Image: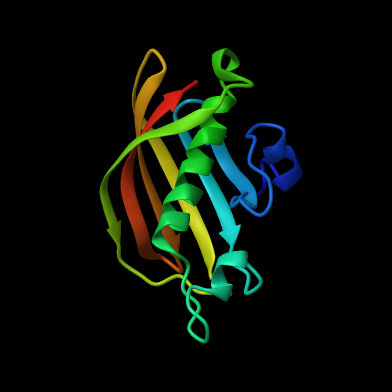
Length: 142
């Protein structure tokens, strides 16, 4: 069940194509948890150079995808609506599976802590039940 589609996501976070990586939000508890989906398409701009003839979703794009999902959860909170969520750090990032065109990413992000406008989230991206990427994301809400 889709809670938010791409057009509704655009009303919450400022990202736009070609840098909007979340297709839908499946479940959200504002400020606590989010489950999102990204369908990885062959026409994504980064596949032209990463790598010709052997397309692999860049790890930095996986991290950004997880961060965008978490940002939706945060920006649904009344006190943060209209704000900007920025990276403050990335810890314990691990890449376990190559992501290719045709894959569907299932992203989950749990907010671990919040202190004023700085926090930490635990995020993961899974393809067909297999972990593709995990990280702890530190963020700053501006």
